[in-house]
Image 1: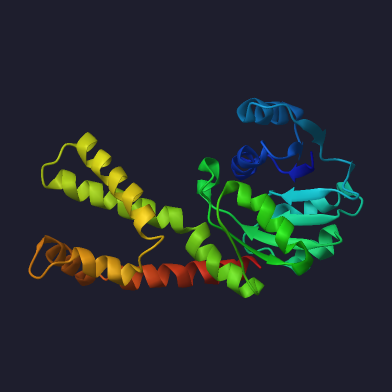
Image 2: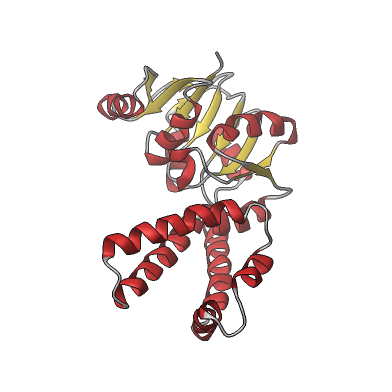
Length: 253
């Protein structure tokens, strides 16, 4: 069984490892053996554990899951030349990873929070010879999409990477609106969750504009509510959210 070595043992690493554990052997490299033991306990399968200082990456397949600001610092603690590094670091360029960690190949990836339930929408870009392997590995946590450039993955970070937070805001607001009108909180939350579950399936097959038109009958309840959203500039705010997230990714780079 092929081994994937995680450098970093935070929440994203754990979410991805949960998706990979059935198909790959897991090794995790971190600063604290106590935290590595906790990682293993949360993963609920045996893993190989190693401390960061002096770890030899030579010929390893690495999944880099540290904080972007820590790339330079960890590079001084690692030795060897990795076969390939799959980086999940937002806004961290291939050039920066190459300058600090010097692997033979690099693929940038951007999974999202849904990795924990194997439904992440993960975007990828980098050394094209690893496209197939990248899609196979990250495909264990949900659908993948190979993009042509780092600019595009930075844009996609603002959409798929940050998107769960935007949708969570909308979900909470819709439930709050129902409570405001008199629906019990538990009922509002149950209805909202059912809404998002069904919508997630529909949007796979139907263009958003067609889906909206299919729900909105003339002079009906949907048209009234939709007008309120347009009055509140929700569409414009969503467009601006992607722009600001992309600009932030550029700043991080």
